[in-house]
Length: 218
Image (cartoon, rainbow, N blue to C red; front, side, top):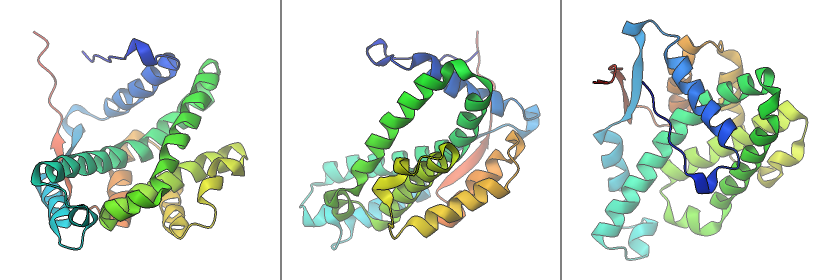
């Protein structure tokens, strides 16, 4: 059994959001039982982020953050970049499937995407680049650009990626899209896709693939 919970105060695109999350479950169960794995960030990556934040030249140190604040920021940054690495490339596969197969969701899908685009461009503000370690900031922004370019090209709407026009990370984002486009889109390649993006982004070794265990539903 899988339970998807949503906040009724933020349910404008609830049908699309639930179907999107179901896409991850369906893709997982396309694998044979002994091939099903979960993505899990590990202590190596979390420790690396902490080390970066504790560096005397880091933005966190220049802002004179106290240790509890740094630990909180460490978890926020590490968990966020791992979630982004896990969800963006596979989410693009799922969104394309929903776009092609479920026309009744398109209005909600577009509204959700535009909302996500608006949230993503916040990372362009100078204070984020000053505060976040480059090893987090660059992969985050690169995936944001790839995501925007994917939809801009798919819909023939270059304005969807206008905020990132001529950005220095664009070649890195195009490299991610090249990997995405050249790798077969069936679910059995989802793990390979994430690994390839991680290698391109310098995030390899920050996570493990662990055997999927069927939840106890008693």
